[in-house]
Image (cartoon, rainbow, N blue to C red; front, side, top):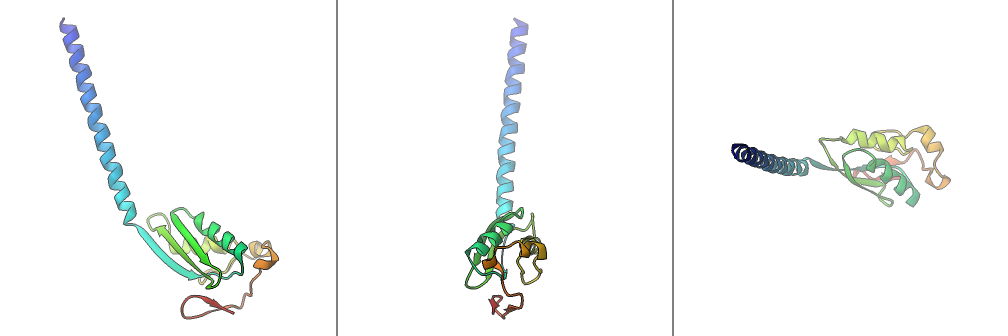
Length: 138
């Protein structure tokens, strides 16, 4: 009889301890999610390119950077808007990723090898000048 009571007490103790750990883990997860929301940053900068194929390549390059949440390149304005978690990446990492795909940004010259591999419609004028609004002009 004592063994049965002792066994039930041990099982009850283990069950209560287990519930406390699950509650603690849920609280920690919630805290982490809140802090990630506060780490978001938005940037915009000029990227040379010409067409819809450029748009796809530029956005894909930016979105591959860990921490980038969204990237949208405007074909007309030659400008990209990027939202990212600044605890995981920074603006230069995004510039470098786009440069590696063959496109010039305001801060990084595109990779010549990647540029040479772009379709002909994506070959842009390298002497496009940046205007004061951050967009490109021909």
